[in-house]
Length: 133
Image (cartoon, rainbow, N blue to C red; front, side, top):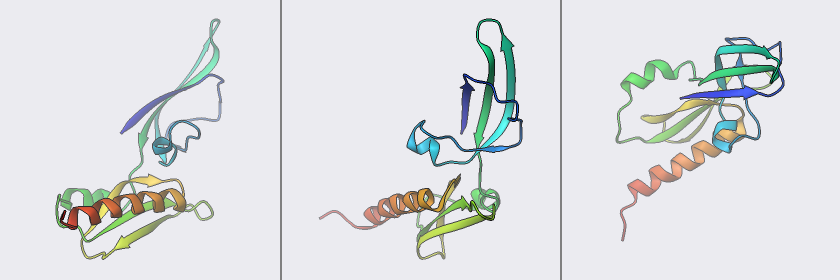
């Protein structure tokens, strides 16, 4: 997933290859950690100094290998990944049996947003398993 974002006021400290989190855009966007691809600094008489960001959603490190192996179907649990703000390391939030988990493909910005995503997806998985009466 990609996102283009232009800051009305330029920030010279923004460069490619950093990770970004956004606030106040949309909850689904704010929850994800974004990887900065193209960062374009522009200075013009009409708009002043602006910065355009081309962002890509960041995948958890150990999910990349697992994506090729993951198929639709009989999942037994859910795993979401988030970056711990204190250590900078990736951590997980899980629900259900982890013998065949569905890995959520985004790297979330906090344990709270990862837990909310796990709870939402676990609820969907449980409702698919429970036959309608």
